[in-house]
Length: 133
Image 1 (tube, one colour):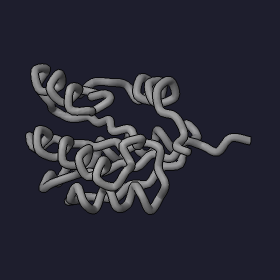
Image 2: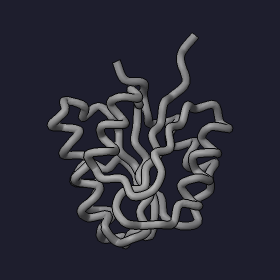
Image 3: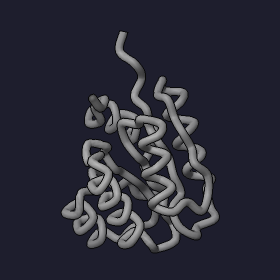
Image 4: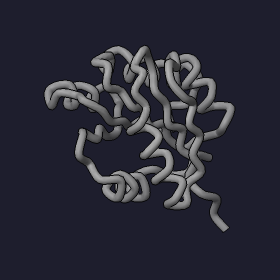
């Protein structure tokens, strides 16, 4: 039997609002995925370290603080330095359309904006995230 997808949900930076991240984490868990939620105020280094320790298939970042242009690329860069670029990075939050295009060029697989249903996120993960190794 195939193991469930393992998804790390993280709140990078100083953003103190985690209701959305908790809703997503619970929805993914209820959909049969293994979810690791790291909590608030995580640095990119902490997120990548947790992802490697937990052997996750993907990282979901939740950002409402406006720091997405710094936090997403930092996580992707650190994954590459740790030879873990096969860990997919996706995220959500209040992110302008122009920034979504740029983040995509920098390696972010998908950005979900406010109002996206949990079913849509689950369907995207099931259709796009693959188990590592």
